[in-house]
Image (tube, rainbow, N blue to C red; front, side):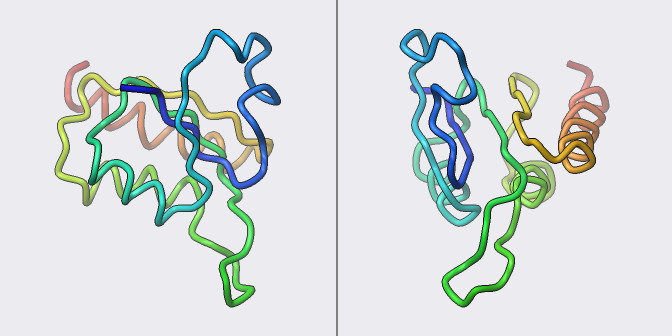
Length: 110
């Protein structure tokens, strides 16, 4: 299974300098993130952006933090093996995502 890249705009090469060495599936929205994991299961690694632009109605779309919260609180998946990176340019939101996932994984006894 490929790694998962959540970002509304960036390409893999914009985040990972040796992009050819990485195999990712890209999802651009929160809804696509949830659908991907429901369909394919937990990927070996997830790379998170936070700010995911606007939805089809022009409102701020659910963000990467919402995706991380879905994983922890709603997915029902065993996350003990979860590997992740946060590549968001939003430092506050990036820390929220890292904090949520690291605290949860520590709670699980990773």
